[in-house]
Image 1: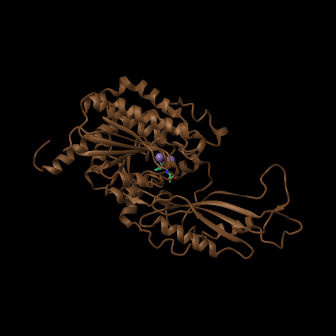
Image 2 (image 1 turned 45 degrees about the horizontal axis):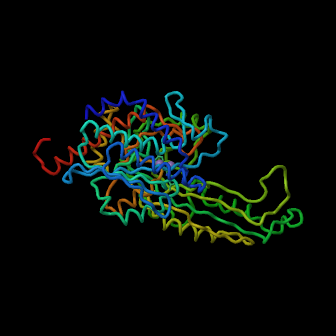
Image 3 (image 1 turned 120 degrees about the horizontal axis):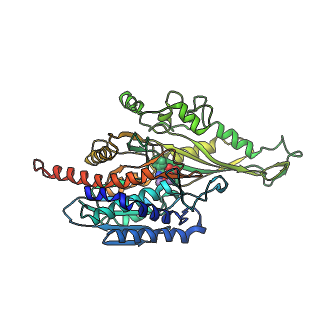
Length: 465
Ligand code: BES
Ligand code: MN
Ligand code: MN
């Protein structure tokens, strides 16, 4: 792998320029006005896979945004790594909070600022560049397949069908994903768990039309007040979720596991300061890192209704709405939690209002093995390039397709990400360190190398590599 890795320096500027070109394409999957840009990003990715040396590339259409597929099979008897990532991004708003426009990438303080810089364009592009270098230097040690989708940020709702229809094509030994974070640039980590997600939208209806709040106020239920009461009742004074059965399937960590987690560096003061909060808040009996990774949550993501324009309008509104997400942990099931929520929320509607609950996309939580060859290979690769053994860490985010890959392909994933939780993905001023981008390009080939070596030894014990 040495020639590959040595070549990163001389290619640095080009690697950055190409990523910036990708970041200029506003591939926002949630908003249909960007759908031609989403296709443009897919075409760009396909082109770059081809140029890097993939011998088969395709843009596969789905019911939604296309999936880009590419592969390089050097020898069918060698292992196959399936690289998964996404080229779509979250909407960039609120635009006024960006220091530079979200789709005009700039490098400031050794960080690339743009929507998607870290999540996930920068990380998936690092894979393409690592592959390009391994090809160029004749150092690709195994087969590789790329599956790069355009709907991750809207729940990957069509990828399941694609995977089911293409089981053979996607057959592999391991799935490698860089769409998560390390603890810090000097504290590498490999993600060993992701939370699942249930996402619902609720609609509370009171009177059949907006009313004068003086004439009717006090006598008719206000749906916004009712919604607030209902939401407030979803957690008790210990910040425990009150939906009956919500915790039934939650796996509690054993004390040794919690102890190991507590060894990862975490500074509450710095955390509060960085976020501008006076204090942290969450479920009693758990630390901040635990609350944000191994415990389930319920959060209102948006709430609206009534008059929100300039000045005041004395109105008793007819309707109120909220979007609510619940992050789930093993062994909770997204479908089950969504139906428990629906049943409970409908049951707590006060007199005078009616409630409707609609389910959005979701996904199941996962823990990935931390004793597998692939996990060892990720550890060895990171140790090689960071100079330190990575810490296994559970992440609070969700990548719903990971559980689906396990179910449909019978394949485990290795979550070897290179972002930082402070990279502001989904927020204004998303960025990705130049260090992180280049470190990814350097580490990925070593994963290929160690994974191939370990697989060989596993197949032919005793024969040295
Ligand atoms: N890359 C993130 C998931 C993530 C973020 C993992 C931080 C680990 C650390 C992914 O693109 C994402 O944002 N997923 C969504 C879920 C999806 C269904 C919209 C999420 O977690 O909100
Ligand atoms: Mn992502
Ligand atoms: Mn994301």
